[in-house]
Length: 83
Image (cartoon, rainbow, N blue to C red; front, top):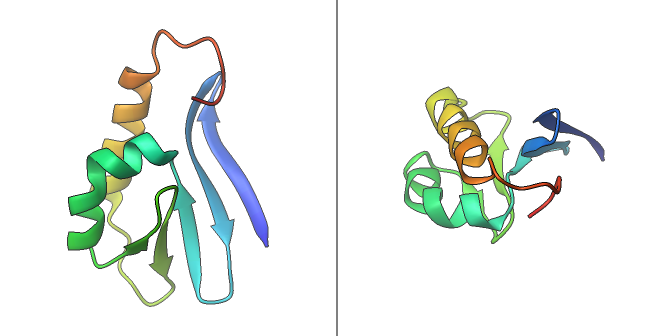
């Protein structure tokens, strides 16, 4: 499985993992908890640490932007890459 971290400097936003049937977005469990309802409303399946966007699904770019904004604000005083 190929993957990449999406981040700026020490601000981790999410990890993308490419799979046969989907792309997995792993923003850390705190963001999953905050956006769980929106993830489900978008039709994505999820675990406590990631959600899956099937290749046939529409990508909810607004949701990804909200997750980036949340992680940026929520982690602004952190000195570690991971929570």
